[in-house]
Length: 332
Length: 251
Image (cartoon, rainbow over all chains, first blue to last red; front, side, top):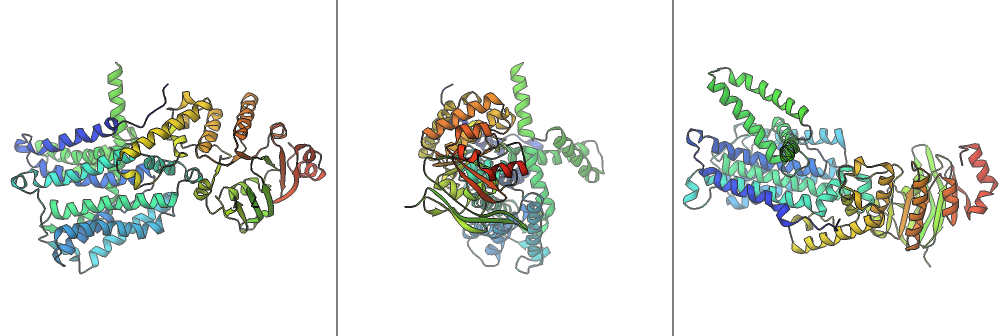
C-alpha cells in the first residue's frame, strides 16, 4: 500500500458541484401544476441550513442542542427588528443578526457546554424555551402579533422576478454551508471534532483544546442557524414574521432531520431536511388525491409512524442506507 | 538545573479519600521508570497529575521547569499518554486516530480550503502512515478502530501517543490484556521507543516485564512512595513485600 495522500479536491468537492448544478436548474424545470413546490423547496433550503448546522454540532462534535430554533429565532428577529423598528439597511441588519446569534451562542455555550449528555440536552432545551419566551413577551418583537413588512431580498435583475428570485438566495447559502461542512469534515479540524465526540479525555491528551473546540463548533453552528433566520425573515416570509416557527417543536424537528439524514456524513442535514419535507407534502398530496378530507388530522399520525419506522430500520440515517443500497447494486 | 520531570509534594484528594499524600518524585531525561504498587495505591492518580488530566489538591508538577496546567497543554509541552483501558476513537480509522496526534486542529484555520493546508495534510498523512508501518500496523490503517483485536488496539494507542512527538511517554498498564507473545513484542517496542530518546514512565502489574524492562522502579502504596531504586533493590525491600503481601498478593 502506498502512503495515503490528503483526500483529493475532487473527492471532497464533487458532491457540492453536483448539488450546485441541481440548485441552478431546479427553478426552471417544467413543474407544471406542481409549481407550488418551488416555494416549498425554498423553505426546505432554510431547513437544510438549520439541519446542517446540527450535523456540524451533533454529528461532528457530538454535542446535542435541543434549542436550535432559538438561534434561528435570534437571527430572524434581530434582522426583523433592526430593519423595521430601527430602520437599519437590510444588509447591516442581516450581518448584525448573524453576529447576534453567534454572540448568544458564545455566552450561553460558555455555560452549557460544560455539561454532557442528558444534562446538555436539558440545558439547551431550556435555552431554546427562554429565547422563545423572550421573543413572545417582548414589545420590541411585536410579541405574538409579530412584525410586518420586512425588507424583501431577491436576486438582482430580471431573474429576481421569477421563481428563482428567492430560491437562489436560500439555496446559495445552503450550498455554501454544505460545501464548507464537506471541507471541514475532511480537514484536521473535523478530525479533532470527531475525536472530541468519541472520547474527550483522549482528545485532550492529544493536544485538542476540548472545551474551546466545542465552543467554536457551537458558535459556528448557531451562526449558520442565524443565517437561516435572516433568510426566513427577508427572503421566505418578508410580509410577516411571527413567533410560531421558532418553538420547541421546530428544535425537535431539526434534530430529527439531522439524525434521519445521518450524523456521520456532511450531507445528512440536506437529506434529512428534504426527506422530512417530502414526507409531509407527500402525505397531504396522497390524501388529497384520494379525496380524503381528514388529511390534516391523519397527516401527523402517518408522518410520525413513517419517521419511527425509518429511525428503527436505519438508525445510522438515510445517507448510509443509500450508500449500502448502491454498493449492493454495484456488487451484483 | 531544572529536572526533566519534577513532582513536588503532590497531594490529591477525592472527597474524603486521600489518593496521593505528598508524593515527591524526580525523573531525569532518558530514564525508563516503572511505577508499581497494589491496586488503589494511587498510581493512576499520579499519572493523571503528570498528564495534566487532574490538578493536584496541593503541591505541583513541573515538566522541564514549567508547571503542567491541563491535558492539552501537557501534550503541547511534550507529555503523551496511553490509557489503562484502551481509548481509541472508535468511530475513526486507525490512521485517523494517529492523525489526531499530529495536530493542526485549528478550527478557523481549517475552515477554508487553502492549498497550504492541503499540503500540510498530505505531509501529516505520510508521517502517520510511516509511523503505522514502523509499528507493523499499516495493514490496519484504513480499518475502523472499534472492531480491531485488543492487542492491535494497544499498539495503535501507543502509536497515536507517539504521533504527538512526546519527550515523555506515560503508559498506563500497557501489557494488561496481552498474551505472552504480545507482551514480548511490546517489550521490544518499548525498548526501541526508549532508544530513540523518549523518556518512559509506565504503570504495570506484569512483574517479569517490569523487572526486565525498567532501570528504576518506584513503589507506591496508600498514596505514598515506599521504595525507589533499581529492580533488584526494590525486589528485596521489606516494605514492598509487606505492601504486596498485605494487600494484593499477585505481585
